[in-house]
Amino acid sequence: MAAPKASVMPVSGLRDLLHRYDVLLLDQLGVLHDGKNVHSAAWDAARRFQEVPGRDNKLVLASNSSRSATVALQGLKKMGCDAGLLDGVVTSGEVSHRWLNKRKTEQQKAKHAEGSRQTGDGRDAHPSESTDMESNEELENVVHMTWQWRGHQSLSELGMRGVSEAEMQDATLVVSQGADAIAVGEEIIPMEDDQMEKLVLKCAEKNMEMLCTNPDMVAQYGKELAKMPGFYAELYEKAGGTVTRTGKPEPVFYEFCMEVIQELYDGKPVDRSRVLAIGDSMAHDVMGASNAGIDVLFVQGGIHYKDLGIDLGEEASLKDVIELAQKYGVQPTYTIPMLRW
Image (cartoon, rainbow, N blue to C red; front, side, top):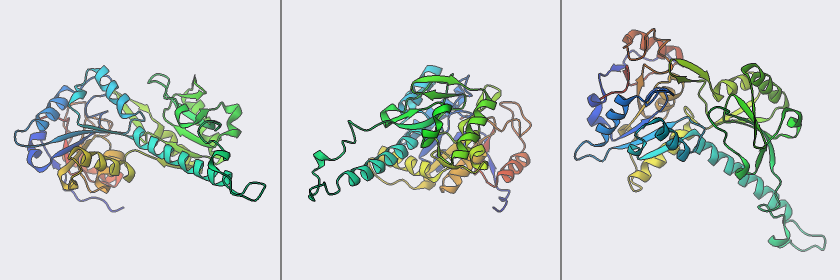
């Protein structure tokens, strides 16, 4: 990919961009909070944008969280964030749920087609004589990477059951929702980093597909960075495994965002030039939004603050921001130290 031109525009606050956009796609970690502390100035800026007189501005959370929209909102409220401001929520978890449901439907159709073939007496089987996909279906065995400290998400409603390493030969899919534990049924088994790496490499040898529901490599928690599912997805690919990602920077994520935005405007299409994405990751927020034809405001005080040689809240030089962007082969439209009005 060609190196981006040096045309990133520094802004002092969101008010500088007020009349250019109608919708904000807001990342959460690194923008609205740091995993421990609420970024009050960011929420104030979002509220001011939403409340501009004579405008119908919208706020949409656009997060690589592997959780559902409902659970993501609950998490924000629990932290003390003013989540009620948000008009819509898109999470990687919601997109992955769609993917899993589609996969399940396709599997059921295939089974139904097989069960509907001619019966022994030469007549076509009636649907009631075919396999009952809903009530008699066995749970699909999967390797379920999950969270211990952030909370487990069951796959049982999708007809799936996490298996142990000893049962891995029976698994058909790796579902990567977390990075510090695996789920065996509903039992959570904590995993150290080296244990998880060995498990991932063992799965890759079996050549199962991996669904990565959170493509982030790391996430910010205060001043620390923690490994995320995207880290293990990359390891899986390097070992020869196949990975499907459902979050940023994947196009499917932004297509879902645009669907949600259109619904907010009663089905009226919204020009992407009126949408601004705000995030702190060059590889996810900036790359994903840019590839989707959406302008992006890069927040310096997120996961890249150390790369930029600054402390949280400090402003990096434009030269350092551009060099960091070139490293990832991307170009943010704007940059700001932290989201503020």
